[in-house]
Image (cartoon, rainbow, N blue to C red; front, side, top):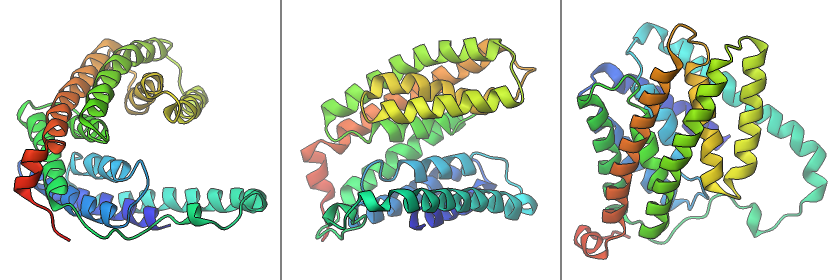
Length: 271
């Protein structure tokens, strides 16, 4: 329920920040900075801040329309309510299999907060959105989202591995999505394909990230382009792949800076 509230708040603030495309990167950076501080302070388990950044990026890259904001926030709210309801029903049947332990604690306050880490993280993701805006990309949110995904790595090597895996997985996944879009399916078939892709991605993401990215890429392209039957499939694939590569490159550079002890020490830490 706490995460649901942050989802709603993230979308609301992002939608308000979309009033100007040139100030949007700054708004995103400020949001990510305070979000990362909060995530680190409460030691939120992985995927940590990623999905909050995803929701915020989607909202801030949409066309600013204040009149439709209540309706859009309401749709997000209904989605989180339905998710909490399903989780509650599921827990009724599975609660007997669990016992109270330290692993059940979702939030645990940290003794120190690394302000430098949050600053680097925020600036890098802001630059990613700025680059997408300058290049006038059709769906600029893919760049900061990919950047955030790569920067989730725990070390410089892990970040580079995630970046390479994401690029290769995106390339293969884009081809798979091209095949799916070429089938010209619609209606109930689209819903079934999305459910299957989501299930496969959730099963694989905790076991083999590189393979999971293939299905995650196909899923996201299908969600974004599955209903746009008038657009050539190749165009969607090319745009998506370029956005991913750009975001991964920026994220890799940001990750190198993030795990550079000399730069981190200059930025300093606060307790």
